[in-house]
Image 1: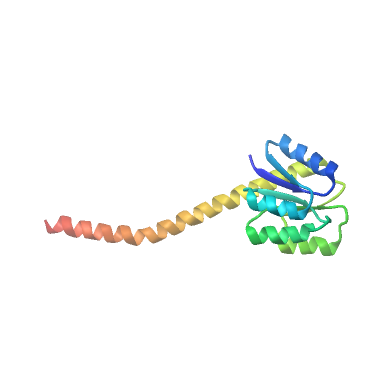
Image 2: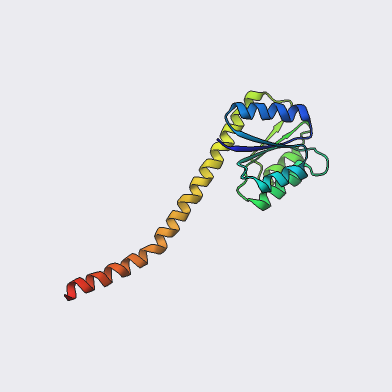
Length: 157
């Protein structure tokens, strides 16, 4: 089960997305604007952010930028009813996982959410394996020294 934050100023759409994501078995947090969304993101261990592009106070691109400052590996899905090539390029450059235009089919959201959650899981596993690699790499000299000392002790007696 992933923790997913949905940020959209349209109440109906936000609730529809929340129900769709809950039906997939995920924990859902919601926010009506980018400011509240960023606070929720900082307080919770969120796995995926789904955000609208145009919102009052803080737009989706600013939220994306701020979320990436908090956690560079954050997975963010951008949705918009006002798509432009410029905003799509900017979102992808800032690290958005996907850019979906409204209106969309709920099946499309389900597919993208599944893929995004899987990406987050794989990124976490990769981080774990990297940590294990470095731990093993730095612990090898210790074990070599220990074996040499032990061998010297055993062969000396």
